Length: 347
Ligand code: FAQ
Image 1 (cartoon, helix red, strand yellow):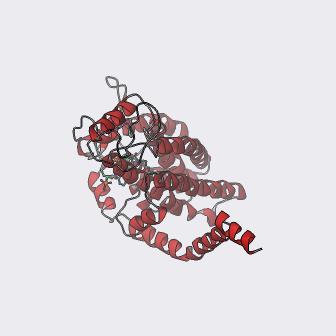
Image 2: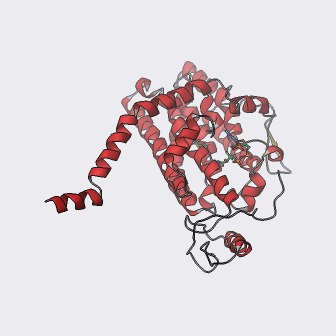
Image 3: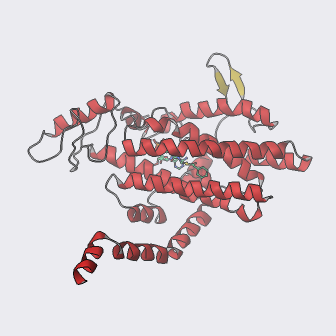
């Protein structure tokens, strides 16, 4: 991890008004050192930084990077599961899956909105996603080969997402923290539906049990990679933790997830595909086998099994949705207060 003491400097043009610890960035206000000191004090006092508060440019850029990546993950993350909506084995399962996929796009909306409070636009963010300048989570570059994958995504991918995101409810940036509260509640439902789906398969016919096991075998290691590179190679963790954006390191959260999953796998009657999993009395957690970080890097470089397919589908969806955006903008313009005033004057 890179070492960081407190905020790196940088100015921001937004003026702040929130509380004694918040200096304003307006002309004639305190200088940059005072602004930075007030910002650091607010973070240290567990106060929330709000959109109109002064913040270092690097803090803003870090938030935009992480939140945009998170928002992109939510909307790209709809694709692997949507693949199974038409083939869900019952009306009940189809209704549940449709609701879950709709929730994911909702999470994307909260997160894009929260990112826009940092002075960027949704168009800009989507453009960066489509041109490969911003990332989305590695996990969504794996295929969903069988119905059991829907269960494995719910149990493992949503489970990993919750483990990572519950601490983000205490993120120092207010809009992100508040969005996370609702997202986590919904992710919790998603995780349970995945667990319940896998339980039904695991206790079903031998073929269904084998399908569930195969899905867990394929999703386990990529789920562990969701937490990001090991702490020693995590470029942003130290600074993000100093700013209280992140509360725990990648490895600490990964460990927490492994410890949660082992007893859950036992309850499911499924095996986690890691012969190296052992209870370690001294650390009070499970040791696990080595993660294939070469595979992770390959996926990040665009060479995962589905990278090309996912981004192509996303770009197509964006192009095909152009008429909806145009219609919505035309409707908003027609019904804006200015348009209403003009109509009243003409009458
Ligand atoms: N995939 O220095 P760090 C979900 C990048 S939502 C791709 O450790 P950081 C819901 C990282 O960006 C899942 N890239 O970075 C759902 C950085 O690259 P950069 C998404 C990754 O930010 C469920 C570089 O590696 N969740 O699943 C990944 O401090 C089911 C160095 O890494 C979030 O986004 C990765 N896995 O920590 C939806 C949560 N890991 O930007 C549908 C919020 C790292 O310098 C269906 N994000 N990288 O080019 C976070 O908590 C953090 O950003 C981490 C990474 C922990 C992901």
